[in-house]
Length: 267
Image (cartoon, rainbow, N blue to C red; front, side):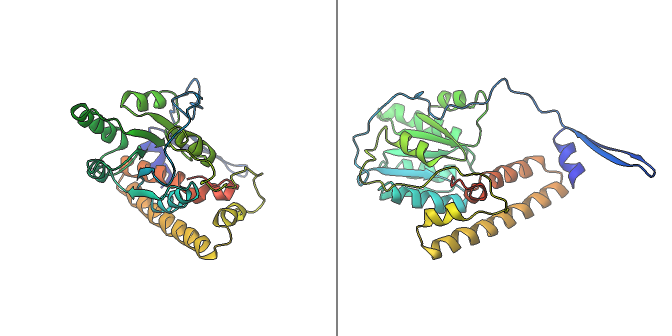
């Protein structure tokens, strides 16, 4: 399996062995080296904008196809005091719900089935030319390399936050349009040192606020989702389908619970 993964990425895998001395296994993969990693969390570059829309009145459409992330972002919305939100799992549904005309903000996952977030945003901006409207669209993407921020701007997005999403950063971005003050509950989102054990549930339990059913639901869903994705990766490697396994690994590497293992609850 390893050699198929390496070769599908354009790399080489080899071994050098000497009797009674040992073996050296090596791999070479031609990754491009970026001059810098995009660190900016927001297109607005830190400009301070204070929202006037009350959390209880805000209407947020969320595009997210990962079931575990859906569960997590729903809980975050409740903690922010945002009661009117809907989560959809592909780009076609985003367009359908947008056309209903009842939303103030769209949190747009850039990697979705049917139609990705970039294409959906471009289509929405085209439709708005005939209506004169402009819905706020915030990109949520694991693409955080040089040029990805510009890609979001060019397709018409209003702001940008990279995955795994930091909750405090998301709060800051939404606060440009929504008055997130007393209505929003505080969220414990402090980074702690990497624990000795492979799993640290302290942050999960802190986020769940003693709700053991919620803890079990997150963990069960994480295991189910991970098993499903790993099975998909295995099948894709057998079929030498590089596109499918890359998308699957992308989804697995940006699941919410992945970062609870490091003590940081992100989605």
